[in-house]
Picture 1: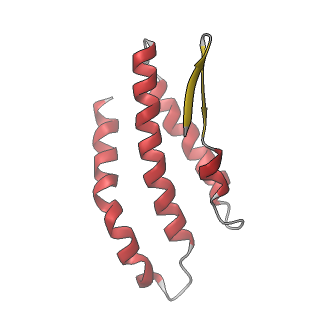
Picture 2 (picture 1 turned 90 degrees about the horizontal axis):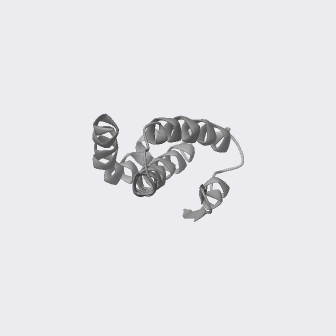
Length: 105
């Protein structure tokens, strides 16, 4: 994700993440809704530029992990759910860490 400040406005782009979604199942649309909610929570109490950059970096880390999970889950086919369990295992800890980060905000 690219993050930069243009005058007084902050900009970020995560189009690479969205383009990696499969073209069915509505994953990209669902992720966009989740992103809006996550950004609303993360940015609701930002008071300065340093805090803004820190919160956008937190969002980037959460987004990368969440996108990886959604991509893995979107590859599941009925009756073959157990095939993705091992692929999801590395993300179990990051989900817990993400919850803790959000509780601290």
